[in-house]
Length: 280
Image (cartoon, rainbow, N blue to C red; front, side, top):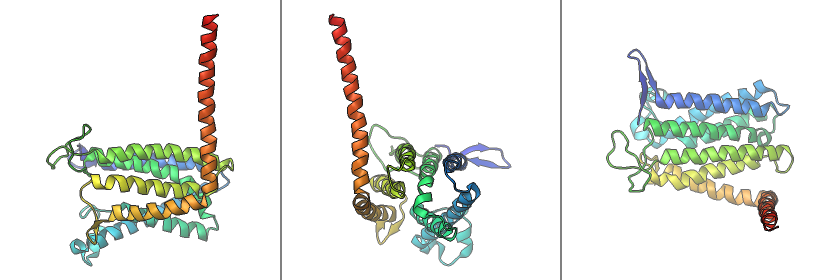
């Protein structure tokens, strides 16, 4: 693990910071490219992005401070000095981002469920870089394991899970899936909001599965806050998503099921014709 990528004596370049910068650049580029396909004003959408990021940062920090109130108390300086007293709740940031963008786009008379789908691919790209940064910097540590895939973290004993790396891989797959589904929405095959609800469910599922493979949890009444909230969101969004988008889910599996069947049928037909030519 490499917390500091480069130490120039007068300034330190942190590994996690580099990955965050790369994630921001790549995710905003993808968002810009997707927005160009629409009639929305680019500057208005990016204003919404920055408002959402500010809301996510503030609310994520607030949730972290509340859950660690014994360490912060009512000391405003500790709340503001993230470098000196680090910590942000990722679920708090997600809620803050959604809330801030919802308010912003509502004021601008832009339908939230229509525009927010265009953010989801970029969101997962940002998460990929964030998780890779956490892994290589050693800021997010997995629990102990004897599994074949394991690593050692600086300052921690024993072999441990590559938890943030696993999450990065899953979030990368999610970014590819959401981009594919965005094109389906643009073709009118799926309803607006489909990607948004699916993304929340996917994100919650990943955290529900991997939270037990981490250390340094945020706790609420003796339970891991991330695990508890991901379970609640997964159950709530899952029921709502399946009920509200049931026809689209059926059509989605039919569409891609037919493509798979056609592909297999074409391959078998090609192999059969080759075999017949060899015999003749």
